[in-house]
Image (tube, rainbow, N blue to C red; front, top):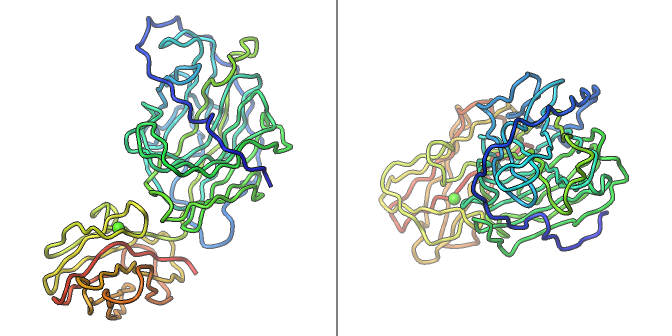
Length: 401
Ligand SMILES: [Ca+2]
């Protein structure tokens, strides 16, 4: 088990600098060898469906999937020109090059798609030579700045400083945005993997409601708590990046590259919240207003509807047929809650209803039972106000069993 140490170096602040005159085109990076064919570690357990990924098989970055990292941080400026694909992998060129006030350039890609719980995996190798920080990590943003205003969750599948090519770290951070750190950090610190990370290795992140589990080459290496009450759980992009940090890079080893063979994301459980409107499968009829009650995550809104018949509906997009246990997240207001809200579960054909008493008990997930579902959007959960008190809508989840 890696030792636990506070971790702050990975989040050092660097202000963006104005662009300087363009430097001459950099020399081409050496072509990294194609990755050896190897079995992916894959997600732990059964029931997963891959719903996002890139094998980096083509000769150009798929800009429909990816933004480029273009910030200026620590010892390097990041440039789209430094990212390429060849030999079945994505390469981030690391260069001695004057740009944007820095003497070195790195780069990376950030997924346009933002995701949440699931299993993320990449196969990567870092460069040879000191001075570079390569990472596979999750955070909001589009790569134009290190610290987007909307950043809340940061999960680092690996962060490796090339000065120590056998050492890495796995981390979870909570932010309040724009580079301001929140009170939540669960870091493993830096530990020695016993592996040469300049060679290809797989790195996995299993992010669920119960925490975050980190894997290297299929072995569980670290578990961090990150349960919904601890900090906001936003939707995050996948970042595959390399920048110059720490002591200045060893120029004699440049140009070089950090490489990523693929990135894959699998989903198993399906959450539908009321914070994303129809884009996330949530819709309402009648009048619903923001509630002061706390939702299932620290920052998840709750809304309330008081008129009889006001209805909130959550409709998951199940990627695979199978057995799921459905839940609705119950809110409690001992004076204003609806004592007889109606919960309707439609599994795509069979409909069942039950009464939810929001005036007693504790807030939390309430099971609606376990049954078979088809893939697709046929299933739904609806909450209907009885007209006595006000019904409260937050989220539902379908957990694979
Ligand atoms: Ca909510």
